[in-house]
Amino acid sequence: MSDQPLGLSRSELEYELRWMMRKAPRDPARMNDFFGEVMVTLFEKNNARIAKDLAERERSDLPDPS
Image (cartoon, rainbow, N blue to C red; front, side, top):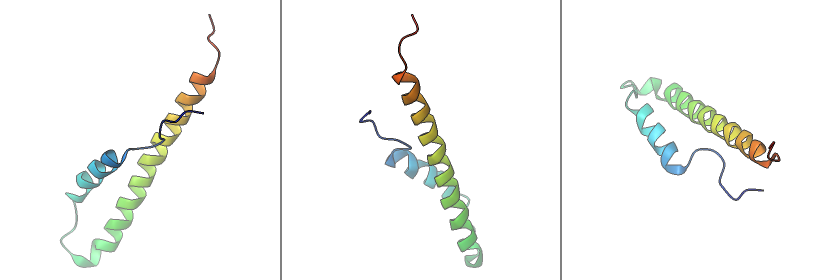
């Protein structure tokens, strides 16, 4: 098994968070919904990267077809 980490790195997650925070609502009543959307989006992006990383690992475990 590979020692490479799965998913987005901390710096990639921080970048995505900063990007999304630029659209933060000014109305405090909407902040809960906004933070919920931010968290779900970060989870989805990280899950997509994990899936991609696992798929690449599985491909690299296959024997060379030549």
